[in-house]
Image 1 (tube, rainbow, N blue to C red):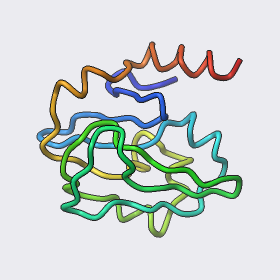
Image 2 (cartoon, helix red, strand yellow):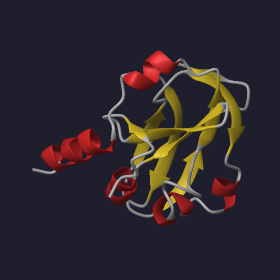
Image 3 (cartoon, rainbow, N blue to C red):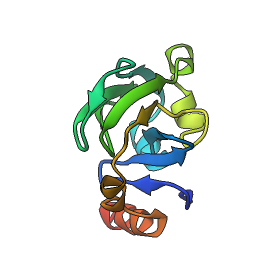
Image 4 (cartoon, rainbow, N blue to C red):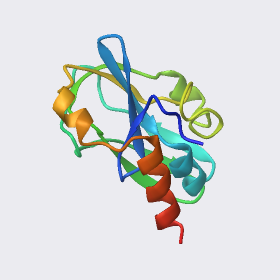
Length: 128
């Protein structure tokens, strides 16, 4: 249900290592809760984000929601495809619907995040 290679937050963001960078997005659970995503606001390349800090937003037909950085770092790249195709967040939240990539991530911050099993349990508890 949730990829094992990712780490998760209780705000429904995920992060995964990709070489020297870390890729960030929102989970399929968050995308399902939002409904059809119509707009994604991404941080600027070069911006510094801190763990738990706002790093963008996502809007859907149902709601608007802030996106929080699962770990701190410097924005190295953003997913420009989301400007034209924000629905990638719904159709491919863990692959093509990623939001941004960070450099300079502190490994200790990654250790504070949930693994896939813990996140699945967290989601199940929230839904009841």
